Length: 586
Ligand code: AMP
Image (cartoon, rainbow, N blue to C red; front, side, top):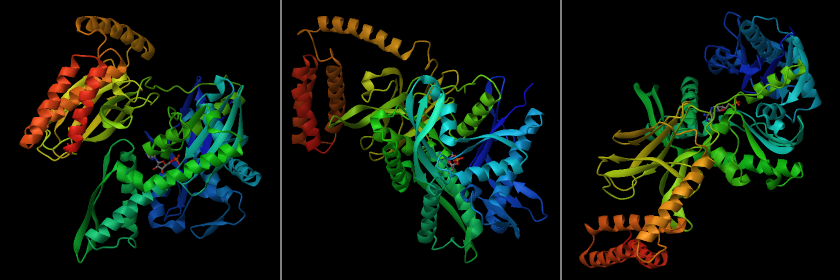
């Protein structure tokens, strides 16, 4: 049997080790349930060497005995101090590599002496050489140094789909880089690369920490900046809140007994919404997008020549990052391979190929469809009640759970209908309705009362949709058993069109005047809008002044008459009612 070659992603913040066994890529656990080793090294009080989580924990209190982000120093000649001793950057990196090697040996039961290690595309020869030396110090023969974007493309199997150009967008904890790669018959070539060595998810945490510090300063008149322990706790709480905000519309920053003032304990309890958080981090995201354009022009390519975007690095799970990339490049980024692990997986794939194996593939379970709900929003310049809001996007690994916040539309609204759709069209009515339910018994509150809707999809294709009134905790939900059915999206659409046609013909025949407002998609939209406006106007009737009420009744009647006729006949009274409601500020 040939010796296994391990693949290592030696990262600035975190590192991973992976192997290929029985044709499958495995990222090895460094502790039960954990596959990420923090790239931190330290020396404990008693002289024990710490690598990973333990060193990261020690860093907060004893930075002089700990080293992190050593990758930034690779290729430099200056020594690095740790616990009063000098080390080269290669030696510190070697400690991480050696730990990863031991972990892989314990897992496989083999002695492992050969590795493929990844480096950023922008690494100079000196930096690559230093990485190679670090491997050798760790007792590893470095079979190949490969570029991180190349490894990512291997994990995404991008190279198997013919000649393509991909943009690899890598946003980690402390570094950002974007590469344009050319993929052709299993050869990956980096055409251009650009980035910022000091930009990443840690900056997002920092914004949340500042937000909390400022809150404590104004609310509790206390400055915690000089309190190292309080700041370390805030840092952790901020990262947890940030990760929550990737899936939920709100997160809390709560720390009991964070500090004290005049002998009285100070607790932190703060809520932050995703939209406020997105405002805080938008400038960072904008900076990455500017870098994307620099890399594109470096490669001599335009946006339209890019076939796919591959996401790498934990911070790419941030919804704002994915949304802004999609807006900017007009392509939904691929995120189906775990962004923290895909570089290590690619390194293992390359390692297996060097060892003579057939190129293995990464297997991930993803949803083939997009699922979402509808909400009032601007559509073709008008407010429309059926704007599609996707919650779980196609190709997201499952199981997955995503939440989004919505506000009630009018004062005193006690119930809301939640519609569930499968599809991609911005007009929800052009998607496939797969379920709906009412949340009833809402508090008597002004418009904008927040409701949190959660979509959870499991590996068996069971979709659970829940809506919760944020303030009261009132919950309603439905379970859709076969959200991912054997019926493919295209087949479903074709079947629906066939049925629509049949129904359309029948309904048109039944209605006097022939082809009616319901016949076309536009007609259907108009009818729905008209019905929604009638509902809204009728609600307003109970509170409107007498003369307004009379106008409303007339306008409602005109729309109701229009509903029986053609689209043209419906359009005028519907517009008139919309204008009247606008005028009444409803
Ligand atoms: P990496 O260096 O690739 O391991 O990325 C680490 C960064 O990703 C850290 O800043 C993490 O806090 C961040 N991160 C991990 N998971 C998420 C998430 N779900 N949403 C946002 N950021 C995340």
